[in-house]
Image 1 (cartoon, rainbow, N blue to C red):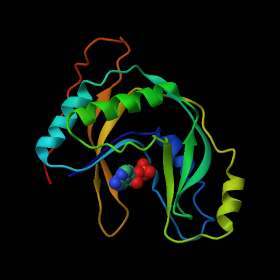
Image 2 (cartoon, helix red, strand yellow):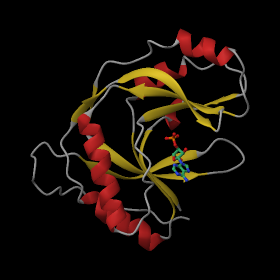
Image 3 (cartoon, rainbow, N blue to C red):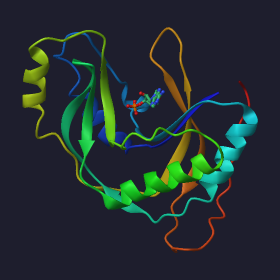
Length: 194
Ligand code: 3AM
């Protein structure tokens, strides 16, 4: 199965982000119920490695923290923009959680990329160069953002690729504990249907 670790967003925020879809040629917009913030991409693993990942994630320690969206931007493949995203306001707690997750996964032997973590919520994949309307869209949405919400969990997602848009499914959820230092007694169960 193909796995990654990420945060979900409040559903009403996803609905609001989806209102920004449109106006960029060659864009494949992400459906609101697929929006997420990737913390660590695991990739294709077998059931044993998936269970190891779950056990490692269950031991990751962290407290709930507030997060807010802020700004928009693009990633590029070479010089061609290929991802259109919403950014997040600087959050030391987010960076720390991501580092803890990446470290925990690496200890299980999963190769998490060393590239600096750039937190973002993908809004659209750009299939080809959208031309000047991309710049106009970025300018129009430069002030896009959100009120803070409290992140209380992170999730292990499976990603199902097919001919259409990828389908993401939450396989396990991990609570951030208010009582710092206490072992998390949250339970997880990884379904093995593929
Ligand atoms: O959070 P987003 O949507 O930007 O691009 C993929 C997606 O990112 C990324 O993992 C997320 C869930 O699929 N992804 C896919 N392949 C990847 C890889 N080989 C990857 N990230 C890093 N390395």
